[in-house]
Length: 191
Image (cartoon, rainbow, N blue to C red; front, side):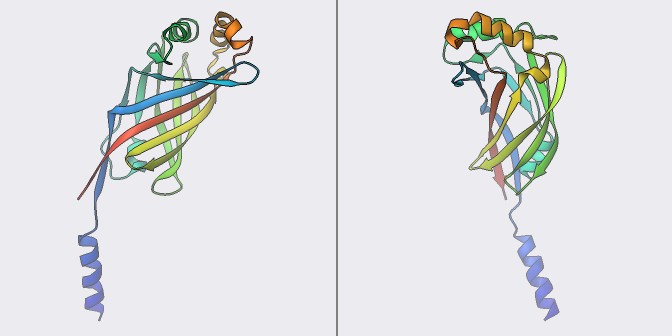
């Protein structure tokens, strides 16, 4: 009887599916939403020039644990060229150290095999701050989301400049909180 049980366990583990995960930059998106007016109207945009570096991994948690990124902040795409130029000129161009945003995942706290929290060290304007991002993985898409306060990165001058440049459109109010949304296209290979 014991021999049968051992054989059954061996057989079931021998045929267990083993998967690996890789992130594909093509098809991945780095988006954000800023807010204007007292009514807090959202304006969405994305960055078109970015790189994400990860290693092939045996789980989503391990894939996230190896992730680092670099964003050219002057690659704004909001669907409105005039708006993009203002955001680039008044908000991102004045940043210390150039218009670059970079960071890496410092810790992953899974709540399941497909969801959890990733702690990200985010550097912009010459300052690094920790950001907690919720993540989920479903049907080949890894989604990370969070909300940040740009004042934590000493971007009050940039916020004031963009508010002045867009004063009439923003009705005198540009909010300091920004929603982040990252969608990573994941290639899953199982044997």
